[in-house]
Structure formats: structure tokens, C-alpha cells
Image (tube, rainbow over all chains, first blue to last red; front, side, top):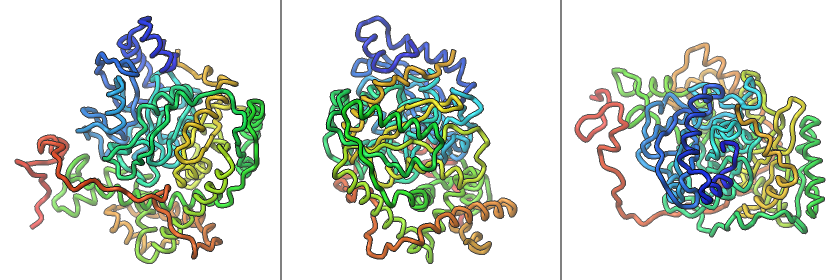
Length: 468
Length: 93
């Protein structure tokens, strides 16, 4: 039963063929037996409650930067190694109201800063397709757990690709919703103008099911948007006649042959389904990495100022207050987090603010306008999720090279757009590849429909490596 | 490019402290990233408005009404050191 999707399990529970308690217990046993092989979880939750509602008591895995009352929320950092959540994030409250249980908190890059889960204080997540390789990041634990049968479905967070890139590397579905669509209340902030919570699942229907639960206005998030969400399950259809899809061909010049081929195949599939295929020009997208690392690091340097050893988390024992601040932060944060705080402080400091931060915000507007123009006559845009398949653990050593791996996922965060990664092929290394689909803001309905239609043609989702 | 002196200043502003050899490695890595960011120099952005919320929206604010969300004991549960109803820090004066 562990190889089934969430919606299939909901059906089986409704028909009384299984109980959610059986699923929960079987999953717990599997996690205890096999988690050490891939290190997908930081902590396991053993708290089954009989529930009704849409999810019938079935278990969801949660990234360890989202508060679930009574659980540790570590952000995979020494800084929060002992931090206990004292409230539920809005997404957790919504899931509870819909009958969810929780099975564990998943491993991630420290404070969601990374693209491989190698920056976790608790060690890297291993890719279930090839354990010498990374899971991707930062929501690598959530993606690897879903891919390996250690979770049915999970939540992650995405600031520059942290849901979509690990979903692509692990061969599962990952959706970053429109900025403001899902409440960030109870998500530990990394870069507040870019962060969004979203589902990581085995198929598009499960992503729609979870979006029906977590999407919606929340007065506790001042950037939450009060626009009614559709019923995303009702949007799914295999008929794409008249749907206009743009191909961002510039992305294909820098990728390997197998990735370029997977996109060609996707174009063939969409044509067959009745979609109209067009080329799309996005002239400023090529500057996205620079733009993103200025904005994200600036926001991070400000957000992470709260970790000073006073109110919660790790504290270095010292004689003076100043020493306590400095030593706590120097001992509590890992190298990548410190690098980003330093870079963020630099671009915000006097003399550099105008040259870096202000210019980056202006460029962000140009990137947004590129997409506005494109979506004035398109319903969706497709491009690869990643420039390569999953790389080996320890292979990427230069921070800049790691940053470049986010090149195709970052634009959606800068422009606030919804974007999804769905499995679309297998590389020459026998690893999964992801097709990324973007739509206009608040058009998750079209996004999910296009993703679903594609998925039904290929059924890559049936190939995930559920661990024996 | 960041000079060694600037790096020392950033360290101070960030409330971080590095070992000397780590600082050198950091400097190379940060300069690699800033070198890459030079691609932005070719853009003329003078007449473009800045965008901080990606939807171009403004944050909304709730009515300024106090709500009790937590008990003091709950908040203090995560404190590294506490006394009575207070967070305790090293002696200041």
C-alpha cells in the first residue's frame, strides 16, 4: 500500500479496504528500517489520531522549517537544534482541519540555503535513485521521502527552486504556488519576498488535492492574497486544445542532449494533446542568478539577525553580551548561511546599497515585465527544471557553481509566478529529469491541467524507486 | 571586489567571527560571486522602478488589536536561560 498515491489511499480508506492507522504504522516501520539509507527525516512523529475530513487521517511529511506544534523545528541548523514549535503554521492548521496526520519533519539545506541538502547540520540526504548522488535541495528530504516510499506526500518550501529542483532530481512532482497564494505564517523566513510553501507528491492529482487544502487567504501573513482559489481537482483534464504553450528555447542551448531531448519530447506530447506551441522571448531571464542572490541574501541577512542566542535556540556560553551574540552566530550557523549573511550585509551596506540592492530590485521589475508580456498571449511556458541531472555528493565544491544550478527555477520566484516540475524522462545516468511548467500568477488551475495532461501520457510517476 | 578591511567590517556588521584562514577562503568565494554579478553592469536601469513585492502589491496590516496568542511559559520554554518571567543574558553593566 506504500506505493500508492495519496488520492488512491483516500479512496481505499473510504471504501474501508484499509485504515489510515495501518498506513501510518506501516510507514513508521519503513522509516525506522530505512531512513538511515537516505537520511530524509530529521525527526519522526509518532502521533496517530483517528480523523475524518478530506485526508481521512492519512500522514503527510513536513519540511523541518515549518512549525508543527509540539515538534522540533530545526531548519537543519545547529542554531535551532533544540527549538520546539509552540504553534502550528497556517498550512498545518489547514491540513489538520482536513484530516491529516503528520509522520515526520524532513531534512533540508540549513535554513533552506542550498541546492543539494549538503549544508544540513544533520548530514546530506541521499538520492533514492543513486545514493551516491544528492537529492537536490533545499526540500531534499521531502522529495527523497516521497520518491522512496518513506512518505506518501509532503510539504516543502521554495525560495529559488527548493521544491522543484529536488522534485526533479528525485523523479516526483513539486509545485511552487503563486507568491501570496499559500500562507507563510509559521514558515521560518529565509527571503520573505520569494518564499512559498508547496506540495511534493507522486503525481499531479495529489498536488491538486493538497493545494485545495493549503491555498487561501490568511490574515496572519501580510503578503497573503485574498483571491479565491479554484477547486484544483476539478481543473484536471487531458484536453489541451487551444492551450497556448511557450517554449523558452534559450534554456536549451546550455543543457545536455538528454535534457534537450526530453523537452523536444514534451513539445511533441503537447502538440498531440492539441496545444499550440510558440517560441517565447524572455530577454532579462539570463540575469536571474545575479538578481536573485543579491535580493535573497539581502533579505536573509536581515531575517537571520533574530538568531542571537537570547530568546531561543543555541547559545554560546560567554562572559559578555557582545561575545555571546558573535560566538552564538559563529558557532550556530554553517558556512553557507554565513556566506549569504555576509553577501547580504555587503549589498545592503552604505556605499553598495544603490549599486547592488536597488539595481537588483529594478532588474526584478524587468524580469516581471518579460513574463507579463509573454503571458499576454500564452497560457504556460515550458523549460527544463534543472540544467543537469542529480550530481554526486561532494561533486560541486564552489558556491558559485552550486548557485548556477538554480538558473531555470529562480525566475518564477523573482516574478512571483506559480511553477511545477513533473518527471519527463530518464537521463543517460539512469536518473530522472524534470519538465518545468510556469503559468501566469494565480493560474495554478491551468498549470495543473497542463501538468496533468502531460503526466497521463507518460506515467513516469509509476517508475519511482520505492525502496524494497 | 571586497578588500580584507571591508571583510572585517562586514564581519562586525554581521555579528560573525571567522578564523583567519576561513576569512581568506570566504573572500575568494565572495569575490567569485561578485565577479559573476558584474554581468549586471551592462544594464541601464535608471528609468526602471524597483519591485520588492513580486506582485507589485502592498502588505496589508491587521487592526491594531491585542490578541493573546501564547502564555509566557510557552514562550520561555525555548529560552537558553530564564528567570521568573524574563530571558537572562550575560551581565551588561
